[in-house]
Length: 294
Image (cartoon, rainbow, N blue to C red; front, side, top):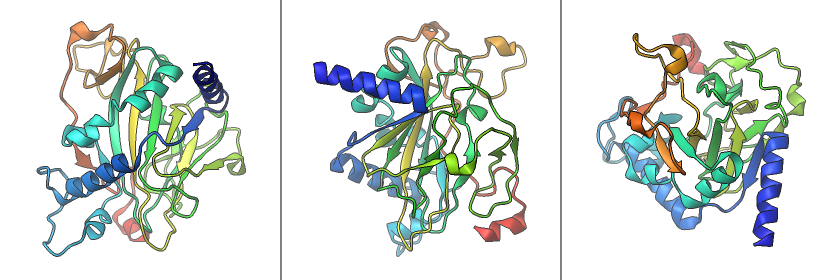
């Protein structure tokens, strides 16, 4: 128990200092095989119709089908397998150490990122999912070895600490997709560090951490990852547009999954409003003629 306590303390200290921590071997080979197979089933449309998934020919390989897509949002709404990894016990154990004891999940994304697919420029996840108590945390599950060559994560250690959301603008860099990029922060690109991890590892990082990924420049193959976003149950989640009769300070997105402890707002009930869909590769403002660069 003393060793576990030491590991837990060291892990939490690293997360507080750097804004991220890597925990190796949270998924085993069987988990990875299951997730990779499920990703192919989702992209083939085997689990039902999903907006953005196109028909598959009988002679297409899984690799051919997967290569069409960069990111699928909320796969847990369609796939029981994907949903199970939201509350995967080894992941939840780390979440409790870092932000617990009461933890809820509001989003899951499946990144496929085949050879040639772009990365995403510097950004902070709180730009997209605002939490009132700054508790947003991502659990970035590596389904393949993530390397510099195939477009692993990069992060600027300590950039979460100021608690500032930096302004954003459209990027014209062809290595990135069309989501906006953060700018105006007091850090240089070369302060970023690559987070190369083996398949089965999980990168936990703070919602204010500046991070990015680069294009997959490997000759072939994928850099697949399943990413879950969590926060403390004690905080309301003012995500998405509130109903007209709800003041923004009281708005609370309730399509969430409680994975640890108790939800003090459980009496409000839970919603089912988000759905599985493919992220359009021109999301964020690319002009149609820009898509050829992808």
